[in-house]
Length: 222
Image (cartoon, rainbow, N blue to C red; front, side, top):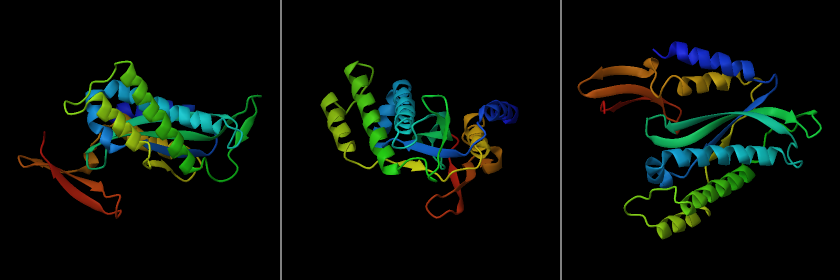
């Protein structure tokens, strides 16, 4: 039922792709912030998207890495393969961009950015965004969490390794755009994944990222 909507989005985004290699980058927030997200979805989404965008633009604009302004398509996901709550953002990044003098600069070393550096910069920007939103009074806190407890949690998360993934380069971005179209316009559960629907619940198949195997899962309709 979402096929036409998905194809229209895919056609529009494909027309925007540059004729170059692309990279798929995934930014994921720490799961300890899930409850805060549920209470503050709009400001948390804004912080996540801005932090991911600023991280990519800042690092790739640096002469030590690329020294150019790249093109980025971003898509927010809030669920995992088993439909569990899992906020993260997918970014399709052009493998090159325009220098300050308007010249094309392509990624020539085989990888987009060092993951370790991206993790550190993204973590810092995201946590700083949460702190500023708290100072501006834009966040509702869970009943059991005081402002001080949140600040302590943010300090702890600042010492943890965050999950950022940079996939191998793609010769063209259409494959990733097609992948994103299923989520952005197709919903979290496609017809092809459904195995059965009855009073016991909804059974669907998913691929377990831990071993790569396709497995069934049953959840209640709710």
